[in-house]
Length: 315
Image (cartoon, rainbow, N blue to C red; front, side):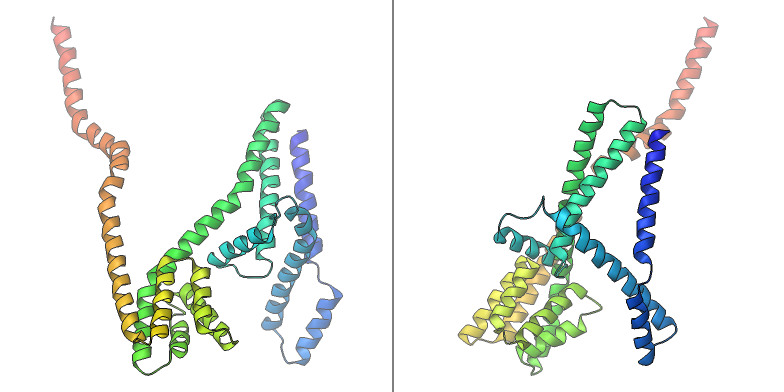
């Protein structure tokens, strides 16, 4: 009963803090008046207020929790921090506070997992040593879970970028052969592929903005390959830079690269199809074969049992 009361108190305090954080401020009222003076009213004003409230709550909580939560897991040097930012960029998270949120989430998830597992063990009546051991294991799993999530996000985003690369290269070849410069072609591909392959379109748009800001094209393309961390993109960037350096046709180089990527994608699909038979062996043996065995052998086994019973009664 005491454990239940403690859990209820924790939940009540958490809900109260969330309600207090969501209460509107005087500054929000002033912003509402300013938006109405600009002509924004009705549903737009309400939606803007909700979005602003969420952003303000998240920013305030981040400012208060982040210094305490990130201190135990802060990288030791700048190289580790840059590597973390690069991994987050490869997963599609490029905001300024992405690294802070990720580091804080490791501590927060570890503490919450330890508390949840500890409360569960106490409710079961475990001793102190058992509760501490299970809580430490839960904290370790919670601490490592953001890393697993980040690796999974990076892998899935790489796969989406890799799948959209041949189609984007085809459109890039058509744009270059139509007379557009390479920068204009990259911008056009980024705009056209927004709904089909949004991840690759975003990367092309970032490269276009970097070129417009004065960064050399070769460096912008190298940044593209570094952000995506996809080997096919790195080889594409190397081919484009070499073709531009030696004065060869960029359209031909892109066409050959698109054909090679398409062949590689087809070979990977065929490889996955051939692996399907091997992967189906385990569920067939564990789930489907016993049911088939029961259906085929069951009636014969029942008849044999009945026959044995009748023979025993006769003799």
